[in-house]
Image (cartoon, rainbow, N blue to C red):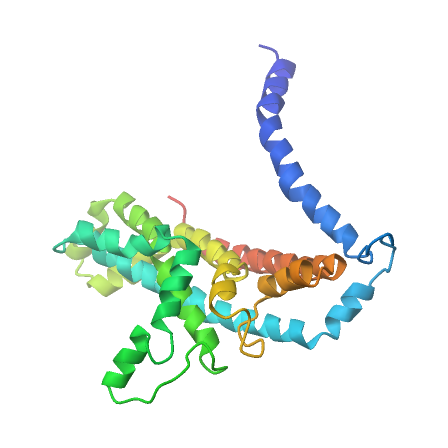
Length: 291
């Protein structure tokens, strides 16, 4: 087989994947960027070039800045806790504990539940007067509280739902990584007199960095793409306290039918995700040890 034939076979094998990638990833991004510089077509009036007007409107939009602030706090509140909890659960069920199979199933179950079902379950928990959380707090002597109707607690309530659902999913990756490690590493560390914490900090966690990088990238993406829970539980309220970026884009594009402004908002969201991914790889890639 000649070199030219090998190259031809290689490109033919790559062609289906490349076509799907261009059709459903690259082209939508370029088309969205183009539409962000146009006006929204209305009736018989076609879209016209408006340059950076949509981005200027975005800079002066207080709801956008509030949604961005909410999203940053949401990411800071869910990402570290979800990853730490996932690592803790993986280390727990990796050891020799009674009912290990049941624990693994229990931790992973929230992941397989539909997001709408999860939102409705937690909506019952947070229901004023009658919800499960209200029954517990009343039994402890606390006053009734509208958890999703208060600006001080609504976003935190969404964070709790996200952590509950995502930690089990991330746990699976950490558990697989722990199971793939050689048991001779722990035996050698024990012979040298290293404590379990020292072994985890010096050996286990560095070897888990490839998984941590993968999980972190997914956690950041998930933190900026939440819509389902907000639609069911709060609809962005109260007073936009739980409006996140993607939900605000959804409202602008499908409730107010301002597709051009929604395209500009989408480009900002893509820029944030791209910058976050770049920083993660630049910072963590140097600390990642591949086996």
